[in-house]
Length: 374
Ligand code: UD1
Image 1 (tube, rainbow, N blue to C red):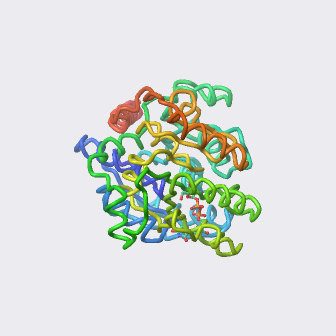
Image 2: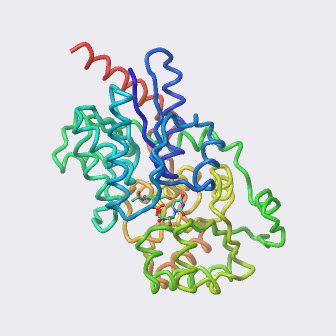
Image 3: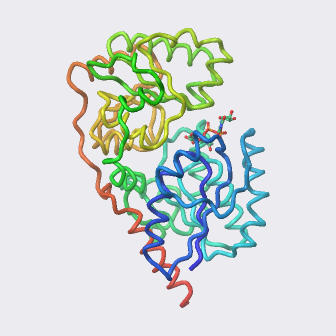
């Protein structure tokens, strides 16, 4: 079976790595073709991940780049159609909730090619998030839906998706985490590489990431968040790798002075192993990322999520995650609580065991066998 696997942006890369590996273990049964839409294109957002995770170089790169949602989604669709015709796969596999996910799924379904969605059924119930729209629409047009947590099935059932199409397999991103944990690169090594041995972190540190449009595109919201981070850094130093979008907004709004202080370490986007080491050794993470909520739960590190909702409720129900929103008082109260009591202990959710990709590869192959026989 020829399976066309789509990646586009950073959060896809750590999810495709174990899937490509699991397909190659099935030998002759599967030929996986890797297509990169080029939604993310900076070296720091791409090559660092492909190299560190041993992802094969993409067979096809559409080199789409940035743009408005409409431009980006439309450009991916236009360029993906001829690639799909050329490859003629038995199925198209898409991951997560980025614009590349929806764009390629939509092209494939209209060409009559089965769509397989990995990380299906997550819902924040917040339609102002572009990712929420991508999730809902991708799930509607997918033939097979692989889920990471049991809550997803209820979401999908509510939206009229037949339960036979849904398979609870666990979390491929946690496969990658388990596989690479021993190789994680810790803060002292990062400081040496960056020439920043002056950064003091004797009593530990918090790791911070911010990139959601709802947090960084509005100057008042971004200012309040950065002021809160500055306050936190007086108690616990903060390590802050900056997403290109966030760096751009901080410059645009003239907010750089707020975080140009010794207790806040600003870094370029980190590679996978660096980010893993930063999270593993942190006293807590502050984030608006989806993936980091899950990774900190897997690592048992407290996570303060700078959002009002999460599409990954298991990280709150069972894991180490607490939702803080973006109100400074609420964030500081939760921060104080975590510092005082060490944060939620949490436990590891079902099937976050390092074998999700193997389950997907096996199940998808069996499904394609049955289709071929029918
Ligand atoms: C995308 C995903 C988001 C994911 C995030 C992880 C969508 C709708 N959003 O958001 O779900 O959490 O990736 O990073 O698909 N830029 C660069 N270099 C790059 C990529 C982006 O400089 O390699 C800058 C550009 O100014 C660009 C902006 O970042 O306009 C936003 O990039 P885009 O791909 O549109 O979305 P992300 O915010 O990265």
